[in-house]
Image 1 (cartoon, rainbow, N blue to C red):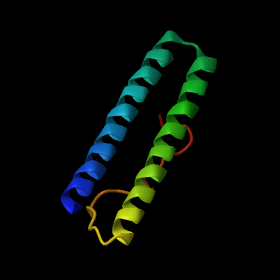
Image 2: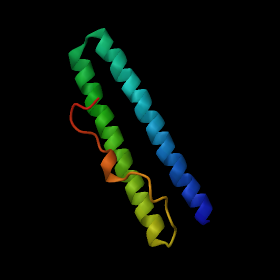
Image 3: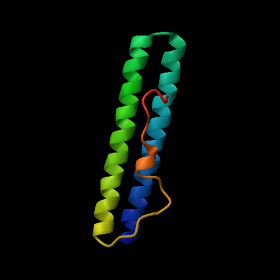
Length: 87
């Protein structure tokens, strides 16, 4: 079970990163289109998705560790949060 949970946590982290990259690409497309209002809304949505994904993963790791399951130590946790305007 430990390996299955660790693998799932890794897959979640990878999926979150893939989603964020796709959101960043969309932000770049909007930036090129020159619609600042839509771009600003998209940037806020991107930040919210990334931050909530990190929160979700942090809690999943917390519960896994509380059940005695080792999680990957070198993965960033809170450090990955976006700063306003960083996209």
